[in-house]
Image 1: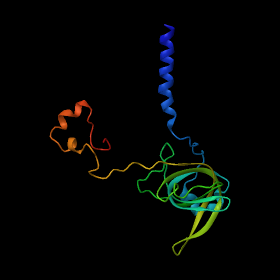
Image 2: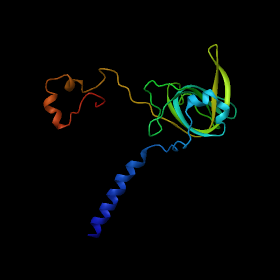
Image 3: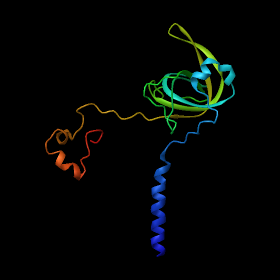
Image 4: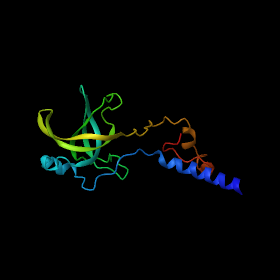
Length: 179
């Protein structure tokens, strides 16, 4: 009986250890302002904590910090930027560390948590744009979803074959990412 309890306890630990694999991103503050609100009046929100995210546009390494220019997007419940086309404007995130621009490349999704410290003017092409600036306390670079080219599946025969559908019940699930 004692051995069974030990195996049950070990099994529960194994199952629960899989739940801790999500990145630890602090929750959004209760009064987290939207990026569009801050764009309208950046000085009114100075000193507030924010959790924002989006797609990296540019990475600039300076002597003491790295500046990320980010196209803001709404976040889902996990804090991951939604890439459904919703655009909230741009913001600047300053991190007191070196971030490799090869890893933090344009097009990657990032979430930052920090304090609003004001705004900074820059140009986008010839247009003068005012970026809200976040002094970053924590950040997370999200993994890129794996993209497969059409026809790159090594088991392509099963998906275009009349023999595929009878085998469905034996574990051949489908062509959407199962190769």
